[in-house]
Length: 462
Ligand SMILES: O=c1ccn([C@@H]2O[C@H](COP(=O)(O)OP(=O)(O)O[C@H]3O[C@H](CO)[C@@H](O)[C@H](O)[C@H]3O)[C@@H](O)[C@H]2O)c(=O)[nH]1
Image (cartoon, rainbow, N blue to C red; front, side):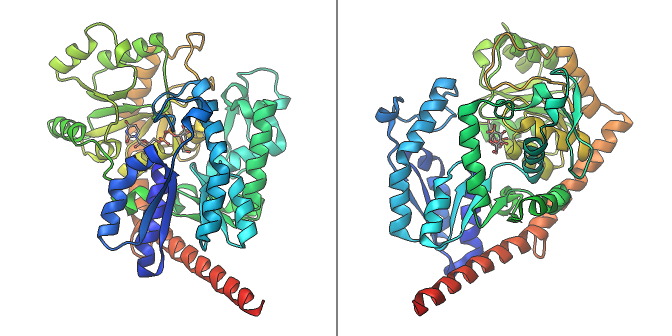
């Protein structure tokens, strides 16, 4: 949601008086973004929000539960998807009424390809992740390399992509391994993607150039790299108090000395896993900031001990992630490899310890550890959406040694930091005047204008 809103704001900012942007979302989600949109409108950008009431009752959900942040359980997950499906006719009606010149929607909304075709307007599919993920997913689906290996833990090479990338079957998403109901849904998404005018991706040339080209070649689709969108637009969604606490604490630390650990907005860990993480952080010689949802499971006295010794800061709720990562004291980032976290870490030039959990996070990990090589893996082998005590534990020792590789004084650490810093500079260049992403954005807006003129021409002749 955050990068999509960034993109909407970016279109409004780049389009001046010429482009009007409307964001369609549900009421509770709208509250998270409305102040940023109001500020944009006040500064003259033509941007507005249309809100729809989420059908909680019909979907069997408690009021206000309209994204996964509040409670990512399997049951709520399915109900949410059901609720979104119920909204579909209303969303389609709104699109028909407003008749935009272009429709940008999440990949997860295949219906938007149909209504765009009906209105003769371009649909741009927003892929929340990067080109690397799209290419790996495409290769695995087309070639089934995991079908030819004998065990879950044996490595296989992903065929036909620009670099040598290895994975194990245990790291693949359920969907790849053939859950029929999900497969049908993902087939629908793919067909909708292929019927779209093109895709837009929050990435930039120096991070994924070969994969952007590979994707365009393999799919024949148009694709635009518009990122890092967080650098184009000032977000300001953070909680002020958390932000001040964190930044004051970080100000008192040495440059590159603090580890930041955040495993995304959706990850939940089992109690034994949290205990292992706490042990590793307490025993490690590096100070840390830990954003976590499982504070109530922290070992007895842990929070007090680390607070009193000045060793660590624990953040409850929403951490000001971008501000933390950008702080000069941050020297490493333990991440679940959600695409936004990777982009934000890259922008800040911070090397990473990768700990993928589910979704496409294992694919993203390989971009960091095997292709661009600015991070090291903690060694998770098993893809799983839900935290259970049966999952193999990542022992504290393993986390500590991965952190040491990234934060220690060795040659490997210096090389990873050099690469991360270089990529951070490239990211900033990409969004600056004449940068690759700025140019792609201009090109995309031109193309949308072109589609509009063509349509007008056709309507005129008709
Ligand atoms: O306390 C927090 C927690 C998160 N964030 C922000 O929330 C976003 C998290 O996004 P991401 O890193 O992509 O993680 P998820 O929320 O887990 O993302 C889901 O969506 C991504 C984009 O499609 C996928 O790459 C992931 O696999 C999937 O889990 C980032 O912008 C963070 O800065 C905060 O600011 N504070």
